[in-house]
Amino acid sequence: MKDLKRIEIIDLLHGKATDQVGKEICVKGWVRTKRGNKTIAFIALNDGTIIHNIQVVVDLAQFDEEIMKRITTGACLRVNGKLVESMGQGQNVEIQATEIEIYGEADVDTYPLQKKGHTLEFLREIAHLRPRTNTFGAIFRMRHAMAFAVHKFYNDRGFFYWHSPIITSSDAEGAGEMFQVTTLDINNVPKNENGLIDYSQDFYGRHTSLTVSGQLEGELGALSLGKIYTFGPTFRAENSNTPRHLSEFWMIEPEMAFYDLEDNMNLAESFIKYLVNYALLNCKDDLEFLQNMYDKELIERLQFVVDNDFVRLKYTEAITILENSTQKFEFPVGWGIDLQSEHERYLVEKHFKKPVILIDYPKEIKAFYMKQNEDGKTVRAMDILFPKIGEIIGGSQREESLDKLIERMEQVGINPEEMKWYLDTRRFGSAPHSGFGLGFERLLLFVTGMVNIRDVIPFPRTPKNAEF
Ligand code: 4AD
Ligand code: MG
Image (cartoon, rainbow, N blue to C red; front, side, top):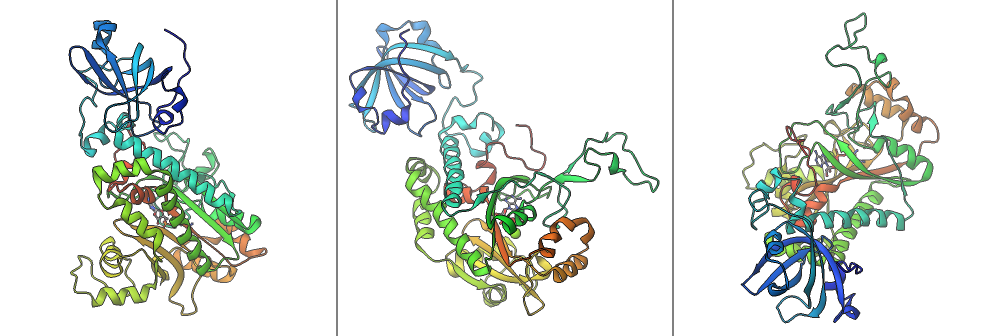
């Protein structure tokens, strides 16, 4: 077979290879469909660079019948052929095959993606193969684009990418939903004289877990470098089998010295708008595909978020709105409750019909590190609530007073001695500061229009699910 330079399908279809028309080129990719008649075959080939396929036209008289039989959906091919302008609808160019090599066959009887139109539920059971479908190709290209945009947004604004540890000895959110990390033999755990597990014999000489948030270590970065952000995996062993929870998810956590809650809200709002706008500008083909297939209002909804101010509202005012509404809620409403997703969605989807930033929550339902308000009852928290998603961002201004922070830790049962390293930020050169966490997969739900969080991460981790 002639050794020709490979051209990626995105370049062929986006007009970057117009000078190649009339010449013989090489493409490589996986067969999406093969159809035709006794004299001619049309192979739709996809190489993952773009949602669209290139059409390979095969004059059957020129090819061995045996080879053509082995070219089935899912097979991987190397094709040499002449690039020509296409008469067919929906494509500018196609390839008239001269030589074909089969890199890998895909058995018709056992390849699970033989036919189109599988349900998302079925595809979740073959999560290792689903990136081969149009839907998951589109989603995972967008996942990449959003990750790139996160770094671009912060880099352009002078933030430093900060790596908080994944293994930690502290429970940042104080919710006790951590996966333990140990090298102790769990069939024969060493005990101390009190009959308790002797963690001094463990790998780190102490009890450790996978982090639920990079925030606390992020605060150390902010109080030295000024503005940082983390972007990494976080782990929560909460037993929530919902379409919005993963036990391994990615979070972006900016943390900024000298930012108050208002600055924090402004940053968060412009950050989300930037990401959504980036998707509109850079993921057009994939967005149009997802809109056609799943969600007719997707692009309109994205544009709406970019074009409109978010509502900003105090928790107490939100409770009043919920109490005065005629809607029947499953969970009763009253000052002090942790808002359920039905409450959040009522505010966003029915009442305001816009994203909402809720601030000044009761301190009892929020983490110990949030700045206490003068009223003694509320803290300078902010949650951003989104249509169809509910909470997409959680954050706050941080308590900078050492005394108040220690008092709050004692109230909620955290031993200040064990967090000495964290309290040193307040002991030495404390400063007002703020930050927030954006759940990366929740953002992806919004920009892709998917409804189940298991469909926006390549290998979802949920209770009883870690096969691949
Ligand atoms: O509200 P959370 O728990 O806040 C924190 O972890 C803070 N330390 C953030 C900070 O201030 N630096 O989580 C932040 C966001 C949520 O708003 C949600 O989008 C996402 O993380 N999130 C989850 N996403 C998927 N699965 C889960 N189980 C999630 N739990 C939280
Ligand atoms: Mg939260």
